[in-house]
Image (cartoon, rainbow, N blue to C red; front, side, top):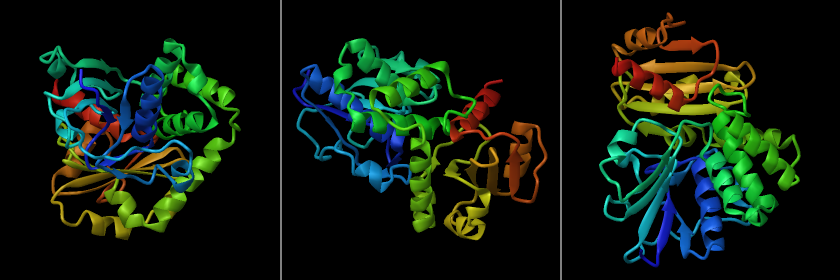
Length: 304
C-alpha cells in the first residue's frame, strides 16, 4: 500500500458528520502508526460553525499526493466522491447511506462498511473503541464526534437514530466531560451561520443526484423555527433549475417542510408520501425526515 493514505468524503460540499469523521478516523489511524491525512476539495457547509472550526483538530492540506490511496467516508455513491478518488486508488468506504452495496461487490479490493445508521461518527467512535485507543478521545475530538451525531440525528430525535447512536453520544459526552446542553450551543451556532448568509447556506447543502421520483436537485436546511426561513430568497436560489426540492426541517415543531418547483413534482411527491400538498409548492410532513430518508423512500418505491 502507498505510504500516503488520504481520508476524504464527498464532492461539492461536506457536512459536520463527514468533517468530524474523517478527522477522527485520521487520528485513529495515526495512533495505529499509519501515515494518514484528512482533507477535502469540497465546501464546508453551515453545519460546521466557527466554534467547531476553532477546535484543535483541523483538516490537512488538500494537495494531491503522489501515489496516494484513499478512504472515503459518508458516501458510497461513486459519482459523489471527492474528485481525487478513482476506483484504482480507493481502498476503503465507510458509509451510513445504503443503496450501493451491490455495486461495490464488483470491486472486492475495496473494503466496505455500508449500513443504515444515524451518523457516520457513530461508526468511527465504535472503531476507536474496538481498536483499544480510546485515549485519543480528548474533549475537542469528542465535541467533533458529538456534533456529527447531533446534526445527523437531529438531536437524537430523528427516526433514523439507533441505539448505537444513543450509546455513542452518551459515552462521548461522558468521556469528553461535555455538558448535556451542548446541543443548544451547536444548533444555535449553525442557525446563526445560516441567517448570516442564507443563499450560500442553501447552495452549500444542495445535492445533485437523481433518485426515483424525486427531482435531481435536492436541498436541505435545519432551522430552529420555520418562521426564520426566507421562502422568497430560497426560490431565487433554485430559479435556474426546472425541477427542485428542499427539505426544511424545523426543530421546534418537529416537521419537515418540503418546498418544491417543477410541473410534475407535486404529483410525484403526493404519490411518494400518500399525502396532499398544503399549498401549490409545499408539502408538510407531520414528522421530520432527513433528506437521506426521503431519498431512501424514493429509491425503495422505484424498485417496486
